[in-house]
Image (cartoon, rainbow, N blue to C red; front, side, top):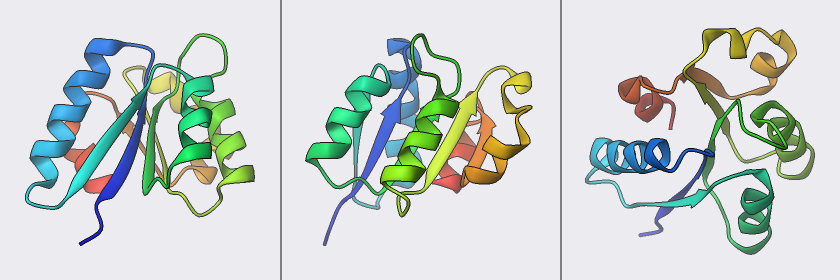
Amino acid sequence: MNRSVILLVDDSEPARTLLQVQIIAGLAPRSVDVVEADGVEGALQILSKISVSVIVSDVRMPGISGIEFLNLSKANYPDIPFILVSTDATSFSDPGAIKLADGHCDKNDHVQIIELV
C-alpha cells in the first residue's frame, strides 16, 4: 500500500507539531507520512525531491506568503491539492486565492483540516 505524503508548511514549529499529530491521529489507520517545512523555500526543495499527495500551508509567513506559495505550487505542481490554513479569518479575503486553493480553514479547526486532507 502506498503511503500518502502530506507537506505541512508553517513558520511556527509548535503549530506544525500540533497539526502533524492531529493529522496523523485523525487519518489513522490510513497510511500517511507528514513532512514539514518552516517556509516556502524549504517546501519547494521538498517538492523537487519527493512526491507529495497534498499541501497544507499557513497563509501568513515571513518572506514568501502562503498565497504566493499557492500560486507557485499551482503553476508548477497543478495536480497537488493545496489547502490554506490560518488563525486570522482576514487571511482568506483574497477571492482569487480562495478559488485557486482546494480548501481553506482555520488552523485550529483540526477536524476540518482532516476532512480536507
